Image 1 (spheres, helix red, strand yellow):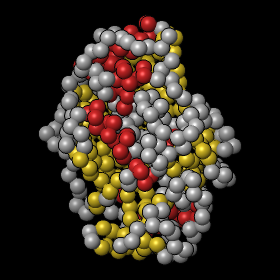
Image 2 (image 1 turned 45 degrees about the vertical axis):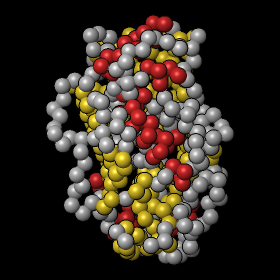
Image 3 (image 1 turned 135 degrees about the vertical axis):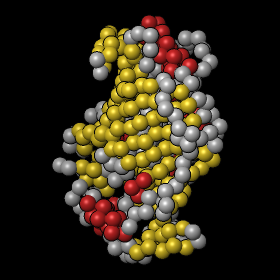
Image 4 (image 1 turned 90 degrees about the vertical axis):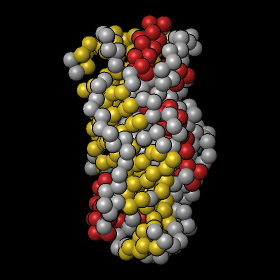
Length: 141
Length: 259
């Protein structure tokens, strides 16, 4: 179980999150959000040939570079690529279902109904797998 | 510039290394007009051979590239072990730059585990390996690296969107003589190195993404193939460690647009 300290430490160690979205329209459906330093590649580099043509699923992927703060992370941590990366820093409430790749700093834990939530500012998050990636989605306990 | 991804690169299924191919030996078919018949033959010999193996284990070294906007290319590396038993069992564990992750498939359920995070997710899965791989990709967005090579219809899958291919020549991978083949597919180029001998096993596989600037590549090297792996009784069954927390998979519809 990931402790809050661990989460905070880890979050602080990463930085600016950027998104690469794969949309059905383009060949590999690549669309980049206009984030500075965005990283293209890893998450959308196919690791298998079969299914590449079939994979038109639009996906949002976050990639981090190193030096920023958890707040910056949260600020760009947004879900669907089609949605502009609205700032999520501080205690600002996010729409339910917003996916972030890492929790902001300073969360507390809450277990309810068998589910563990992290309360970070105005938002509750629960951990989920999005594909192979462990991410956090805003939820209502 | 130091760069990290926060998540495991999404298509790197827990080191799902690969393996498997065709039980039913379909005839060499449906190559594009520009596929050299010899390249098709060598590829199909591999898929038939691997598909006929009832069980095996192997180690893999995986490299996936990301390209920064500056054009600088960065590689992330992971190592994985995989064990497979036909028709419907698979276990893979991956240790890498970004995350350690294990994958269990016992013919009934599929489990993804992040041991360091103390979380896992389990869902009901189809009862064959091929169907499970499709299910994982389509419904969960969980993709087995080089999973193409391990289904029983691997040849068909690999060639479905391939427009051309040829034999590059002989090459040595880990000291083993191989046939080196190169293909062009849908949005990707791919290469494969297949042992030249009685055991036509894949030894290396490279997928080059054409639609991305910098043409980042995924590369997987396969070694230590064992066709009589030591398979434990519980090998494919996941048992949560004390304190591990069960979480869910985000539905694909929530992760992005429907296919």
